[in-house]
Length: 295
Image (cartoon, rainbow, N blue to C red):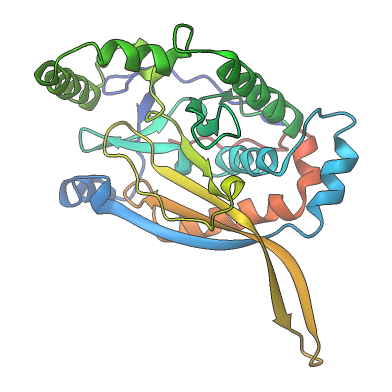
């Protein structure tokens, strides 16, 4: 397996990403034409066949505690980013950067009650993580989030708590200051580590509350360029060539992407990679055979 070479920071790089210098010249102009993330959103929907995943999950729970379908989605995303690193780019200050870490922001409920608080967990992954690594890191973050209360919250909760102590005009000034510093790569690292809006991908599992998938907008604040919403399980029927009708279990996955980071063909081929790993999850049990690097 190829190893990822640590790059030296050069003029124009940020602590959270490297300036993308080798690219189509058009991409130097696009951030000036489409100046906001909301102006640059593209939408993809895919049906993910999960018919064979139940047996895979039950079989591997012996070695991967509490393995779930959610873990498979996240692990397939991480592996896709490893093989398609341009997905981990972001636009800030109208410049394109290659993020130098892989982090997922995941929304989880602290309980099953309708009034239970929602927490955001932000596990970070390495390029060599397997399904077992992803599940372990995810479960550790969720466990910590669910046992914490208002006086002992995670990094995000603590940051929000202190911001809420400020009067409205100071909140506006603080957010403006942070956004300005972020645009020039000078935002304090402590905010980056606590912010769910500075992740490689934001994931929400609306299927866990019985909803169909949704197209969730990207956040203008921060640097997250991908949002994935996972819907509830469905049964679809397909007409076969011999005239018979077959049924399969699927989940609709809806992606919202910032089209400024790479072209549409790259997005489309990356989603095929994601679907491939969802179809063959046994490949996620081993580290990737190769690691691609963005430039």
